[in-house]
Length: 297
Ligand code: A3P
Image (cartoon, rainbow, N blue to C red; front, side):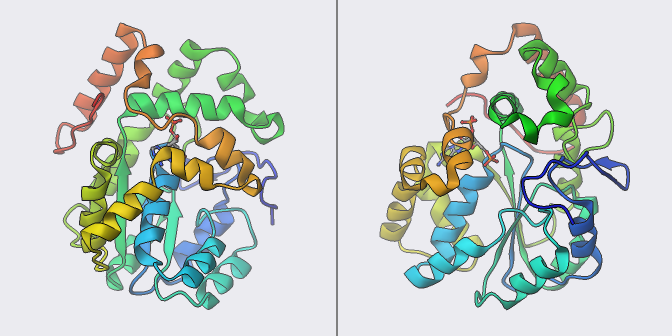
């Protein structure tokens, strides 16, 4: 098995190019051999759309007891990390948490959604406007240590315009099939929109009124909080406070992942033509959905 942080050559699973550093072996194990439990919360995101943020909000809602909150730090950052699968899932099953948060960047086809539905697990899908998301990936990839991204060096060392082309042509391994990227990831999960325990959240709505979104999310999770508690959680989960609270132990998250946390920064990178290109792709691909992105607040 690959060790965490060791670069893997991107692997392919059922036609999907898996993000290097994630593991096909762990993903397949989860699909076939592991069973979620009632109470589990699956946090599904495409990279750079607010995973860490929503993870922290959900932790604050579910783990109000300080000891349990500390214990929850042992949850794996992603379900599909390249650690020996038996160890990861045995560990997860033995953790004394009645409710577990399981983050994943995987498309719905690579997650055993029927098993989730069978146990009534909650699913949160975070949406972020694709222009800010692309800018966020761009910076993230550029700031990662070279040995972690060596297989993709050519895709982000030649500047913004080239990077943009790679992403929207679906060349970039994002747990996506060749030629596909974010819209397809959304569409696959959107197929499950009628499942009573799935909720689509927008990053920008959280930015607009976090306290209100915390209250709604807590209700959805069947862990209601008072408005005072929602206010406290919203305060702890602002960009500045979350960044401040991260220790140097989480240096990559603190200095690379917590970049700006804003809406609309894409305007400093996109040309008008690039912006229209993304608008056209999204209009066409998401035509049959009611998804609306928010590009400025
Ligand atoms: P930017 O690069 O635009 O700043 P993920 O966790 O899915 O990798 O997403 C990372 C993005 O979420 C980064 O976006 C990061 O700054 C933003 N983010 C993290 N915590 C946040 C918070 N508390 N409030 C707003 N944005 C946050």
